Length: 234
Image (cartoon, rainbow, N blue to C red; front, side, top):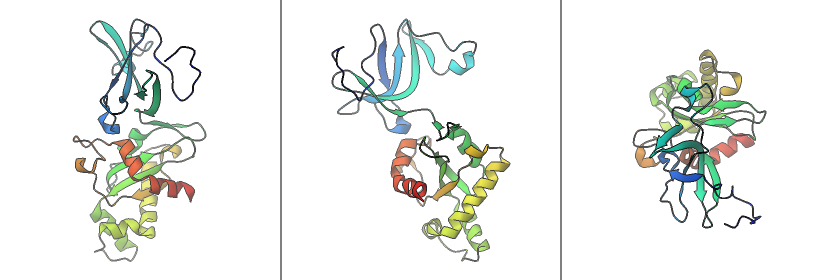
């Protein structure tokens, strides 16, 4: 890339004296061997890299390091190296999201709290800076969901696809999740306002979780994009 290039759409190349490499992020399905362009977490190295965060060694323990006498910093940004050597930022590894009014929410914190709810077998929360609230994508526990249906006067023998599509059941689960979130001492903005009940089981073969059953957040968001857009549009 020429230094006088005024094109837009990328962050440009690394500065002189700064090394850059990409490392795989399996949860997001980004790989340094991706074609046509390598993709992965951006890691910066060189003498310009600090030793860590000021007076907070614990915070920097997982992101600063030394390899082959070179100091490296894991940025948490997901980048793509373009043909001209410039770098485009395409995603963010950390689960911190900023809502419309500037509040930052840790999705991992919310998910860890709500996963203790008996209704939840698995959960992935979503939010962005265009909206004021979170949406929870929930893989529900079938037995608990059937109990909810029975309390609503429905057959306790309904199966997962029917239950996940039932508006009254979805509303009841949403209310239960909000109550559980408040009881778990989550802040108001951390409690999901709307929920999607997912009929699919999140297994490694589905591509929605890793072999270690960690959420592949980007894949889940893409898979349920229509549901997310529908709820935000309502």
